[in-house]
Image 1: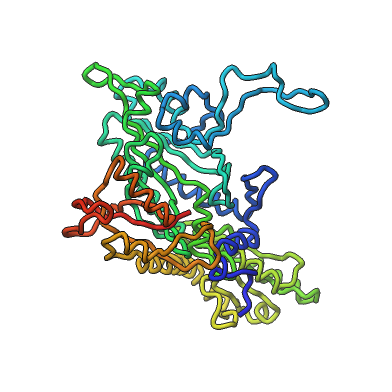
Image 2: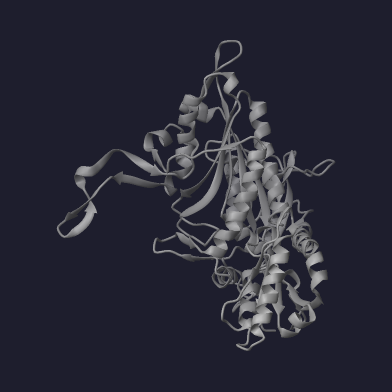
Amino acid sequence: MQRALSVTRADNFPEWYQAVVRDADMAETSAVRGCMVIKPWGYGIWELMQQDLDRRIKNTGHDNCYFPLFIPLSFIAKESGHVEGFAKEMAVVTHHRLKMINGKLQPDPEAELEEPLIVRPTSETIIGDAFSRWIRSYRDLPLLVNQWANVVRWEMRTRLFLRTAEFLWQEGHTAHSDAADAMSETRKMLEVYRTFSETVLAMPVVTGEKPENERFPGAVNTFSIEAMMQDGKALQAGTSHYLGQGFAHAQNIRFQTDQGDWAFCHTTSWGVSTRLIGGVIMTHGDDDGLRLPPAIAPRQIVIVPMLRDKPEDAEVLAYANALAADLNDLTALKHPVRAYVDAKPIKSAEKRWNWVRKGAPVIVEIGPRDAAGDQVTFIRRDALRDGDKVSMQGVDRSKFILKAPALLTEIQQALFDEAKARLDANIIDGVTEFAGVESYFGAAAADDDEAGAAFKGWLRVAWSRPTGEALEAVIEKLKRLKLTIRNAPLDQPAGTLAPCLFTGAPSVETILLARSY
């Protein structure tokens, strides 16, 4: 069967992913190693994600602000756990001027900074410095802010959207008078991420708490949403952290209580990034390219007029434009429908396949017969093929316009249902010994991106929360299989648990084991 991409998911999933990003015209590598150029289609997806999530963040009481890209080294050094966690990924600015020396442009030795500046890997420390000035009394709490920004983490192995040296994200930061309020905030934002992922991205996730070794540097608790990709690997799609009072002590974030004494704040941070776009690709894409949930499709209904350089072209184009205008007056998924006429001077079949690869939810083809008969012929991208033939449907124009909002809602739900069924079917219970883990996952591939690797889901196993050397021993055993603990789901099974798979001690919860991105 001929497909729109040159490689299939089954043959080489990593290459398939790169082909989707390339052929859907979403992004490309830049002249700077590890960085990407996000092209209009990819950025249009991010804008829609950003707009929806920004609304949700504001609806929970947060205000947007912006903090500097550069952070003094001394700020980072104040929090030992934080600097240790990010030290290997930090980009450092040491000079403020260039100079021509011996015919070469290079940093001016006389322009060395008194203190090096870190290019923002995350903003806890510089925002904490501001909080220490903004907070004086219990009346100032809780303080709830968010920023949309770029961050830099000098990754060694990069992949467009999933892991790049520079990426876009939002990061929320809050300060509270007590631990209970801060933890409530942490869990609230985790739920915001869950509902956003499932209702907007149509990407089902498991919410849970990360183990001690996977916590954000300096955090007391880290919670995550984990999504299952079509190759069975897990993607950490978002995190929310209760930071305790560690950052408050380091940055002197204090408040005067209603009793008149002084106390340190409890802080939180939470964020998601352009990595979500990679998650959407690997959750919904097929061997013809991207399949976009309508909620984040920059063009939800693309109309392709079949122009043949003949007199009837004017009638076809006018009919297409009128159809788009009527569709754009409608509302679907709580927002105006985004219909678009692609009138570029390209063969209609080529244009149709371009939009198939881009993942437009509905693709309409309008020819002279459609215009004359007041008909609409369309493809649902989520159900593109029937056997080896393109599945096209023809309906009356008025009926198509009437059903368009429901059609987009139906596509959104169908993509979620397909991904949810895959997630539910591939979380495996019943393994009680490590030999069972080894048997299920088999030997780890030498390359984490092994082409054509067999699909493996996730194992849910009993866990006693070992610490110290016992935890380190567990991590080493998992590393040999290239596995990680994704999280301990918040939704835990009822009844008595089996002994911990790793230690044999009484279990306190179950955890998910998987290979991951």
